[in-house]
Image 1 (cartoon, rainbow, N blue to C red):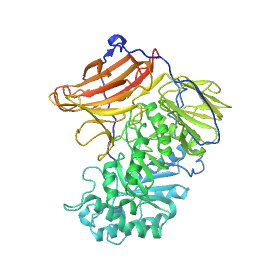
Image 2 (image 1 turned 120 degrees about the horizontal axis):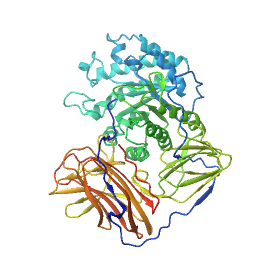
Image 3 (image 1 turned 60 degrees about the horizontal axis):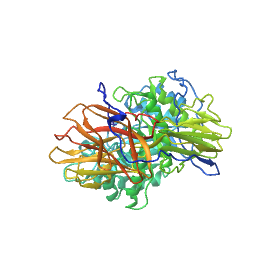
Image 4 (image 1 turned 90 degrees about the vertical axis):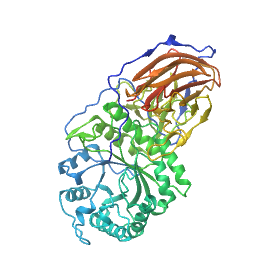
Length: 599
């Protein structure tokens, strides 16, 4: 894998923009959404929520034997291991503590076929993987089609090299019997020089030719194994689009992606978009999230993101995912479920998903209109909820658990405050939503109404932006204004002071309201900064230059139905070093809840 990181900023100065900085003049009502009561029927929905001050869960304990639950047919949640890279075999026992039956690893082609046509499967790594199979575990294997015996050690491109690779895969599957669930061909092939074919070879056509050479022979011999193509760092829809055009969907059973990102929200938008792109070429193939995690130093944020991501992926049709990684590695900090033999908080959250979410059915998101709340229903009586604020009360004989699976004392039968950390509710017969304290949220409502995204040139001309696909993560932008982009929590303008192109995030008010705007903007200290503007109907409410970090707290804005609140970022005077992170919320007047700073 390659390093995937969210923007991190340290030692930054903070500027508070007080409520008195500016106030809009249009009158509006302070009404918020009315309470809604729902009685559960036989639907299969699911949700996630969070409580501030949820009890701390015991973490940091030494790994110990744990009962592995029965296999879940709907969603296979595995974990990345590196026994092929020399991990100590004793770490295999850690998989029982988190309750997984699937590991992702590799058996390097060159380590097995050192003489053409001779295949020797021996060594500690082979024995470790075989031992996992003997316990009833399953393997998802990533195999890079590269061996110094063929095609000068490059990714195989000749007919002979591709045939040799297909033969190796057949021998590999013969060796491990029915233990292998999937073969992922290549690893993060959208990275620089990952497809190192000689000059003159089209990357997409050559990669698909390798798949075509192996697909039918392997499916004839081992129809139970899924052949996965793609294997992109992030979702990489723009890169995969070229593979689809070259015919990849005809010779794979699934599309492998590594959806690394700074936060879980928005992953469903990208998965759905990837499926839409596949439909241009026929019937979409299942998407497998074969490797991903959240490399953030805050263990609670990482834990919350793990729980949320499983719900978002599963509800989007993804039924296979692997967390990176089982054990913490110095080169990729914060990602492991264990630090050596000691489980980390994120490992406890993993086990909570296995015990309290996956066995109960597929999650379905409950339609709450435009409210910035994620509520999923699972099976007959289970919910998960998270969001920016507000309250929700569940009826029935309920048990509330935090994201670590710990029971929340006193949580049954009363209203809970919805927070960014998910809460798991069981035994619910229905729910009642209270008033919204958060009216709108740039992260929780990313990509959907009432938010839209534009670019604005120096003359004030606006151009609407759609999802734009490139080699890595899709974002709102276009080919004409690069590097301008608007993502879930990051953005960048383009141009310079003489010819600026502003990135514009627009909220259109559905009704008259009195709200407080809270926001956090951050960037690395480089260049001459980014100039930001907050406007209502084109009238400035707050302006300034972002150098490192700015927090805007309780900026009052009164709006009528159809009014526009815009947050925009420009290049200031000079081009470059303008990537920033942002998060903004519109809160019910007086319900001050400063926007979280994502770093």
